[in-house]
Image: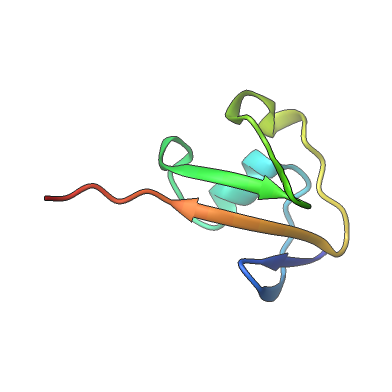
Length: 65
């Protein structure tokens, strides 16, 4: 499926948002996701189906000092 992630078009196999985060190798507790201009609560990721041409913005939090 074709998705636009942070402005870049990518072809990925994930059917749900939580599967996408795993496929991208990200830690779910350290990211926030916007799907088609709507923030998706982490508790809803497994029930959030992705479809062709969805647009996502994924923000990865990094700690440090």
